[in-house]
Amino acid sequence: MRELTYIHYKHDHNMTEEAFEELYLSVEQFKRFLSSVPKLEIFHTQYHKLSPMTPYQWQVYFAFIYYTCIRPGAEALRIKKKDINLETRIITATNKKGGFKKTTIPPPLLEVLKQYLKHFKDDDYLFSGSRQSFWNYTKKIGELARIKYFEEFEKRTTEGLYLYVFKHAYIQRLEMEGCPGSLISIKSRHRPDGRMARQTVNYAKSLRGLKIWEQQHITERLDIIG
Image (cartoon, rainbow, N blue to C red):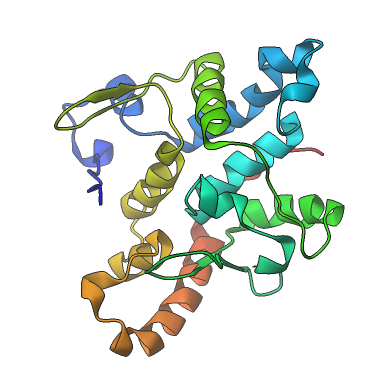
């Protein structure tokens, strides 16, 4: 499992804002990324039908994996309309292996899903495509949005956006905005220290606490129109 490294720009006065934005996907950068989706070249050619999803669907997909922290590949592709409860603001990932199956729907995504789900039946999958198409589109859209981003790993350096950036960025955002660590664990959907049995009651309370915290702190609006 990859360890996340958190960048504390607010507390590191030696790091410029420009350098920080190469290490951390900010909210404004994410919104710029979404607005760049319709600019992708394929949508303006005779081959636009070869895309597995429309620009609107792509925007919803990226918002979905950012705000839910659901894994962007097979896990997101297996989400059906019936897995989403807009009233409780809870999504259940039915094919999740280990860890917590549920995640929350923050206010910006809630408004998007209210419109998006109108187009689906309960047993319909919300998104379609291949892992490779997701990775390719992510990198190209990031370039269109002029987002410089890199991560340094022990054996390699990654330049440009890739799918897991969105989950990492949202988790890091929670940490930087003062979200309690117990709630961040719930959002990342990792069971701490494997103590599964006695986590049940605390988990239910933390899930409610996470919804309340997001309701109070994640308040931006998204310009996604279907």
